[in-house]
Length: 292
Image: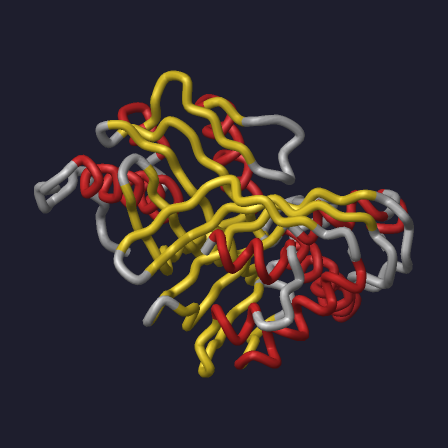
């Protein structure tokens, strides 16, 4: 994976896609949609490299299990051409992303990428322009066979309990005392108590939440998760009043664990997608209000 990122993104080697990606490669990008074959990944790379000619990708974290590899990356570059509808600004960007890869025969067969589009937009433009069921039991039912298995089961228990069942208190036993969560859209890292407050704020703005874990892999003390969050917008969020719309958001995270307790989380969510959904729901909300 390091060779792919270095050869394809940092060295711009012409043969990188053919060398590292399977012929039937497919990918899913949170903002770009479905990417099919060498042409699909080629178009994505071309768009990024045209907009940011000096683009560099750094691997910050790497987790592997079986045929899955998860990378947390930081991409930097200077904005020299149109990107996300914004003309060249000459500004520097730093973009966080988490990518899940499925490997077959030493080549990339599938990829799922979540990246911080909203953070990039905030770097490139001004805020004014941007404005334009069942009961839950927290115990782990199957006894883990190793610390890695314990870490995976604990993180699954934490995420499912907190988001799907409202059991915020389960975090008291599953988060380390010095736990920290980092998200590119947060002004600063969250402590355990600050994260609990943030969860409560989400609960006030959204109801009927469903947190779907789409992939969960572990290696050593690291656990990587790809997820989807769906909820009903019933309170003020991102400056938008309640719309009653169902909002969906893709995300990914990598957690560092120790004996089943979470020490740190690096998370990237498609906040720009949430913003767009809330913005698009406003005309529907106004029409419904006018009708009554």
